[in-house]
Image 1 (cartoon, rainbow, N blue to C red):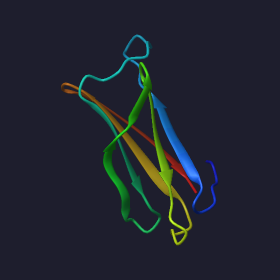
Image 2 (cartoon, one colour):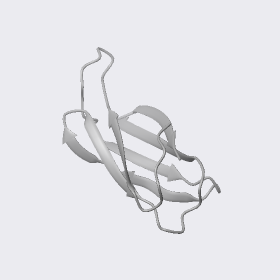
Image 3 (cartoon, helix red, strand yellow):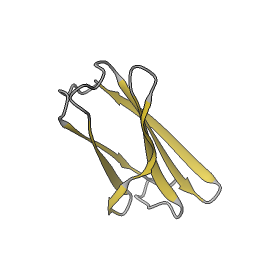
Image 4 (spheres, rainbow, N blue to C red):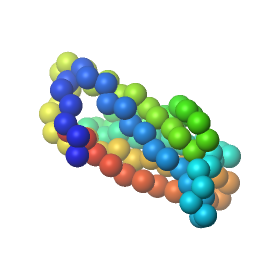
Length: 91
């Protein structure tokens, strides 16, 4: 798990691959949700930036008064009826 100081930018990124392991961009959406250690959702299902086929990122910068602790990140890639979910965390 990566550690960051308040007001630093955390670059949250994911690679989306199909069943064959090839990078692919979902036809519908790729979103991110970030939850603070207090349980408060600080980013709610926001679309991520497409950098290249199957490569996405979202820049999150916490406020100076942000709660210290472990933040959880949930990525959701949707392609029609197929939904892929991945999780990670940072502090």
